[in-house]
Image (cartoon, rainbow, N blue to C red; front, side, top):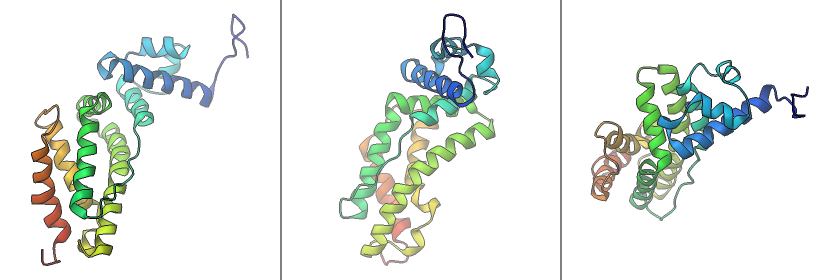
Length: 198
């Protein structure tokens, strides 16, 4: 079906992709605070009604768009658990300190008690975060540096949860490196090595 001006009218998946792409671009350029349905509609070449039929509001659209921007992290391999854990935590610290990390923090704050939207953010974030930490722990278990019992998501992600606490609860713009070292040395490594005589 053609619109006035000879353009082909998009529907279904093609329209959703255009809207999400436009929303992701708006998030990148203006952050969550600058994300508006009007600007997304104009950028996507559609109208606000088309957006509202798919997402009930700005926050739901922002969460969906953010999920397109987030990337997975490959695990480092420094040859030892402490080095790998510090590298993963330093990468996460840089990410949370970046403009994209600021978008995630704003979305989490805006979601407040919206459990469904928080679950979508956590699902994406936790899946992306847990995998490299579990990979690092698996290698450490194989080297005899960590207890096999440590291969659980809660143990694997404890360091990143503590780092998130620095940003979300304390409002830190970035965590100092000595905090990262403390998290790894005083919390993560003792949990991972529990039962190893360390």
